[in-house]
Image (tube, rainbow, N blue to C red; front, side):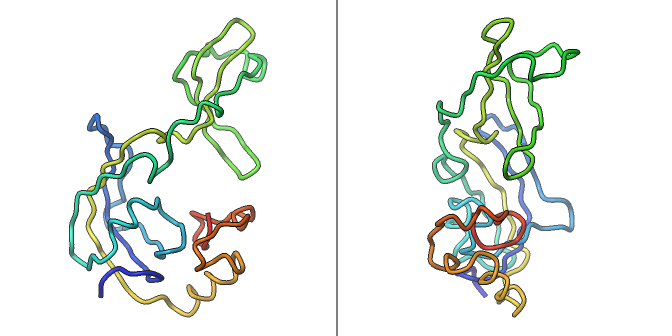
Length: 180
């Protein structure tokens, strides 16, 4: 069976950047699973996997605009230094975990403007990066009735339409539902 729309796919992967730095990989014996057409992985990778079958391997490069997007300067924000713990010597490049409206998020320090102001970068950590995937397709199968029901009940009518009209506000996405 080949990868097509609305099937379950599991694949082993290794993700590197242009520099060669490895930033992620699947655990041995635990391939990453997703449902095609459900917005569960980056679109550029999913598109390149279409038509592949179990056992096929590929090296796939995905441009930033088809992955986590280009760097958006509007996501740089000035915040007061007193929003950080007093006992930390903050430097550019440091990352912190915070909680936003949709759960945990990584905040990166872009620069220290002055003694009272820190510029943070709220872009995704991989925004602006070309991503290189080394993949091996481990499983391709039809959806179970439960998976199919979950697609259509999690986010309502947007599923399958290719549109995302606010469905993502309920925590959809990597948790295994249909919209992002």
